[in-house]
Length: 481
Image (tube, rainbow, N blue to C red; front, side, top):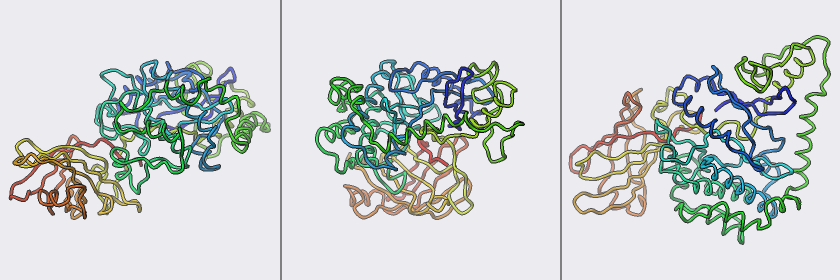
């Protein structure tokens, strides 16, 4: 969603200052969502969350500042030191569950709980980045934005998010289960070679929990249940893992010595920002240092200045501000997973407007009722989609018999223009659980995708009886750049 800077208030408090990317600023829908969600995030507090301190959602360059946490992300720690020991796992999940109790008590859901949004401190885990939190009301309980784009992080989304269904507090519990699996095994519970396959596994596949054993494995399985009603409430998770309270687990020492050492070094580096030598004259930042945003109205620094900008003209204060700006951090959770942006088109690949996770259904009166899911993702070499990147499944109902089934489909790219893509569809060996039936209904056919002015896609093909089947598809997820 934006770039995160390390900043400091006039009173000396260190903050994480997120400035929205310029290409999002002109989007009126994003502006409205950002304004609403900052207001919601301001309400979140508690021991296990990083508070939102201030924001300016009306600025030409909107920003939001939250309390800075001098601790590594769970994703960084596991990548560097491996899976967490059992006692640490219990404290981690209990602390995050307590955070969810507070969040859900405000009738909010986080919607983006993942290893990079969990920071580890000596005092326990901290849940950050409420950039896509939503109110639990009838107008905002879907994973879709108003334009029909899913927000979330593939691999750590709940099945409801992937399928575009209404969301509740249980969606956060599913994501908590994915974090537990990651911390215990070193990888997420759903693994695949492409975003398309990953999304399918989240919605329909079984989690991979590796060597996780005992009540922690049982808990992970419960959290990762496909039916939201089968997942435990955060209060139940706290009662199971920390009947005396999470603070008791944390107080007994929950982090390994290497992680504690890493936290100590990070804190020293933060202090050293003020201890740098002061030159006799102000030193301008080099061209390679990302510039701080221009002054916008706010209350974090001096009047009319966003946090991180120089609060006074003195050389030393200017030097401190330059040092703070130069310390731009790749903080965990720096980019909220708002995946509505189009990737760049490639001359030899499928145009960017066609890339994404699409859903739709056939027009009324068709011989076969087909609820279509189509995944078109860029190739690993950076070109557009090819035969390895285009796949899907069709939930078919045959009009004459009423028989229904789920059919897996694969596509090969045949012809591409800016507004039309022609594919050859086939049923792979097995074709799902109903391979022969699927092959008889769909068979090998030529499929034409036509881009409409509103961004939807018209899909058409000839059926086995000589007729033409049409469907309208709308994108619900696009790959990140």
